[in-house]
Length: 401
Image (cartoon, rainbow, N blue to C red; front, side, top):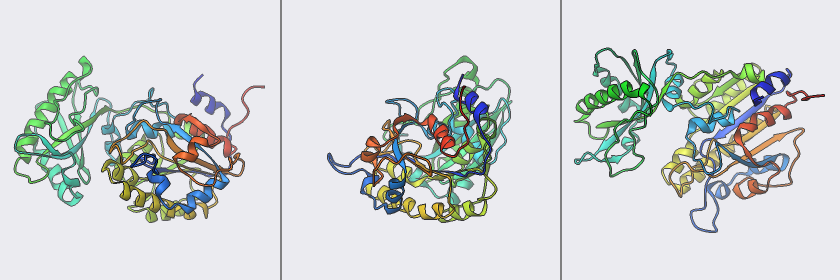
């Protein structure tokens, strides 16, 4: 019996409210040996106050030693085994902007990048080109034409856009063309199974035409393709947990993931303050709220320790607005660690804090990597966080006689 079968049998309807606050890439490392992590260096009085009332631990997004992408990281937080339910970023991005994927579609999350005169990548994100500049370039790529394939190109945000391929015989098991490094050329797409070879052929044609279309652009003179994915099939939050769930996010990818597990996307927030306004407006309409904050991740990926500290402090500042609504269960966590020291996602367990009226406080008075190692939740797989949330909300009945 898997966990979802169990929760279907045991869930109880009540009026409790669960809020899951996700600071993307929250976990970090000291910049120097013996120093503090970004979370520990930040001034976080509200998280520390919540820590006194709650219980904390370190969540393992996928498995020990595995560095997750944002998709698997969030699936784990939502209680879906990220190894069983693997979703490519393309499907998340496409769904996040409201594109209705059909069976047989292959969605690809693309990043504009900058190539130097030798054809090597000098900037993987084209200087984080602003949306007002990138969107017309994405639309320009609609000029790409491939016989027998219907092509959709949709702007997303900043350097990101989505390509959806529609046609017979397409598979989604194709490797990324982003080498995750500068000073080297983009990779060729490679199929991981025979059913995806046609997708590789189509992707190569798209890339060839795109390079010609973008060749005169100063920054975004090419693009990489990531997260090739077919439409996934996931049971919904309401089916497995009995929860009416809402997502309050800014970036399309996270809206997409939430939509794929049956959450409603509410509001059109662009800032944390906006997100808090949306939370208050919809408080009486939902049982569960997922609130996503991106910038602890992007500053970590940029290798900017001080900026990640500042973003962590911004995240801390909205905690009182959540608690003013008196949620039954409040969770603070991340989908993975993104240490500035590594400028990338990492395998390190993620600081996680849970507070409720019936949790067992562990006596810790601050929230950080050091305290989480010593916390009452210990180290646990992220996929179990939702059952802890349901139990603390009184939404799980007794198992067995």
